[in-house]
Image (cartoon, helix red, strand yellow):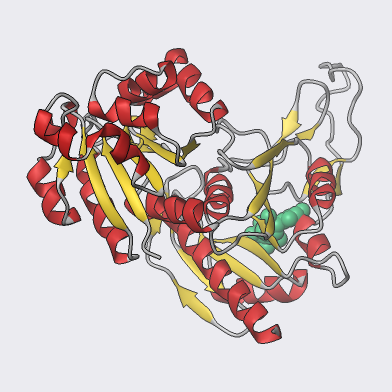
Length: 401
Ligand code: CTP
């Protein structure tokens, strides 16, 4: 049956992406009815939204014709899902407080259907405790969130968390809410970030992994309907929504947390796990002494990817690793599949600024094939991977049945 979506467009530069969102939703057979706030109309016109949605656009709570015709209660009722994109700080604050002094907020207050918010705002506005309080209150009331993503702001060029999720991400999250998503009923474990290996109580060995790629993969799998456990080393990132996040430090803790999350259908090991750790952790801070520079003796860490790939009842159906390479990318990745026993490797060339950066160039190696993905954002890589995983698992279960 055709799904009916009510899209509330708030007043932010990201509103232009909402037009694209309407197209993406309609491509998937959804009917989209649009409500625009007064502020949104400074960025895009009701005429554009109407042309793309193919439906009348609603803008005013106090317009007799609009209110008599359909009315805010009917707008809230005659849909299967409400999307707010962009969800501005102001709209979120109103919704959190239960204000209803314009059409968008009145519809939200009258809503009895799932609501998905796609926040978009300046990073400082998103980080502000007031906005965070409102977001927490809305989450606690059962509203769903997609994004905001990290990236560059359209208006100021500033970087940070606040960029609206891409239209495809919002569409997929919306369809997952409506349909349960292609990975409904599947369990996934994702590792992310660097591990931290203690030398003494204050010093450690680690690496430059930011965790961004792993966090976006965890989010994308959750948006596709999977039940996701993210096992992460220390990062500066906020725990993704709808994901159960386990924070660890060392490789051994990461392995234990992954094993505790089994059984799973999917394992995506993105963490940059330290290959070695200090053989012994000094109980007290190591002091400078006359004896000179201390020698650091290292011992090998467990290989989490190889451990989860081991054949057995608990082995996830699809085990995926990453390979950071600077040369002979495909050959090294193939050797890694064989050595670790995993199913796929996403190899990336890290000779540039991939680690810590926002973009990634992937070569996906499976046991049978190799495919090069274009240079894309880490969020887009996550999206594409979630899609490939969904297709593969759907194919496998179709083959078995
Ligand atoms: N991995 C892991 N546990 C380890 C080491 C690595 O789970 N102790 C996983 C990583 O999460 C990643 C893949 O294995 O999915 C990377 O393999 P690794 O052997 O560490 O290769 P690289 O670091 O890419 O490079 P090299 O082969 O040079 O060691």
